[in-house]
Image (cartoon, rainbow over all chains, first blue to last red; front, side, top):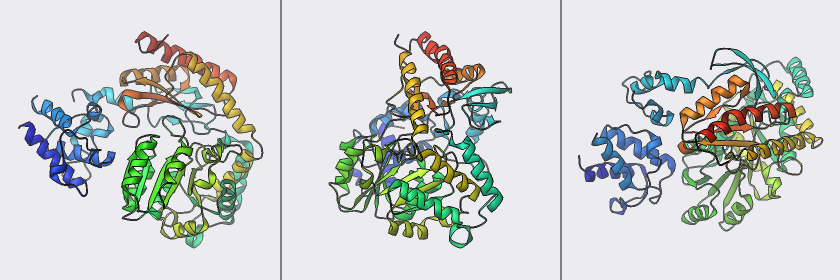
Amino acid sequence: MTRDEVIAVIKKNILDNLEDLEESSIDPEKSMKDLGANSLDIIEVVSCSMRELNLKIPRTELADVKTIGQLADKFMEQIGK
Amino acid sequence: MSDALKYSLADFFYNDSKNVLDPPSDFEEWMSDPSVRVGFSFYEQKLLAAPRSSTEILSNVDGKKRRVINLMSYNYLGLSTHPEVIEAAIEGLRKYGLGASGAPLLSGTYDLHVEFARQLAAFKGKEDCILYSSGLGGNVGAIQGILRKGDVFIMDEKCHKSLVDGCTLSGAKMLFFNHNNMQNLDDLLAKNKGKRILVAVEGVYSMDGDLVKLPEVVEVCERYPNTAIYIDEAHSTLMFGKNGKGVAEHFNLEDKVGISFGTLSKSFGGVGGFICSNAPIIRYLKGYSSPFHFSCAPSPVVIAGLIKALEVATRDSSLRDKLWENTKYFKERLDGMHLDLGGTESQVIPIIIGASGEMLYSMAASMQTRGLFLQPVDFPAVPAEARRFRISMSAQLTKAEMDEALNIIEDVVARGMREAGLLKT
């Protein structure tokens, strides 16, 4: 799976969980908070994306993730294992 | 499970098992890991006596009964075990029996409930008050009862889960501002200008012991019409302010707060919750707040004790004076050990030890074995890099108890952190 494909999964879940958002406005360099997500929305997006990608990463290891791109990188590390 | 200690309750919320009666398969595996079991053994340990400053527990650490100095209970003013409160509750039990035996609207409202609600409203300087059987029910019920789809609920990110749950039930849009960050609050208010907005803050934040910056919150909110302030005074009622009314009184801003929430389980020493506000919104809440009208009314025994507790706590300032004297004494000595106490400004004092879960639980076990009941607080309740012990100070603590507790904290926590290179000398 490529990084772009992982980002596509995250984007899909952002669109499913946040209101009034265009796909084109989701920049991987932005944080979900920048897009209007609250902390519960973020948990939902991360959890749904991990389920879809069949990953399990402890939340404690995601604490320093700021942007959507950084989240994709964390997922890629696990996919590569 | 490899790396079991890296996982926490935050990692098993979603459940893909086919049967709803089966928890996630990896949750079971995780819970049975020996290192995880050690961590969970600290929870639900049995107290064998009243929540006084010295009590007895049945330890899960070694299975022994043990006398302990108690820095855990929310019995901040000692009212749960105050002789006059106990006598009043016994009288209430004799007169009314154990339970209310009905929901408030039909048959659960007793003269005691009406009188106590009237006293609480007068105490908080509001027109009326509604009582709930639990503190959680009060927060959930107020938010769910007042807000509707299309409304906006903006809360400090460190507010209690009950406010989150209330908002989820209400269907209102839920937003969080960074802790005590007024610019962030202002930005969210600006983005939602024109809508009905409720802003929630806590008087004392329960995991850190710091206060809301209420003057700034008021100033920001007043720029936006139809924006009301909700203050959760769970950890501040009866303790802050000239008359013990809470943090709103402490800042002399009671009239700027639209809704004041309090619990009856902490400084009051009983159980329950209450909301004070203007009379029309309390009347409205009584019609739409599910935890009020679909729950049995609070036990008259507890209310009888609480009426006395309010009288004892407010007839003079002696109990809260003693609490603040103890808090000052204890905090000064913890500061002397160079421990990280976060930004505490209250009787809630965290000792932040850092990221190591192993160190947290090992210290908790050592302190308990030495006779100090001070429980670990772990992620996700607090950030993973700021695991901690959280002290609840009490007016009941004697100097001898405090000195012994400080000795144990010095020997176990301060020395342990110093040896691990985590403490400045």
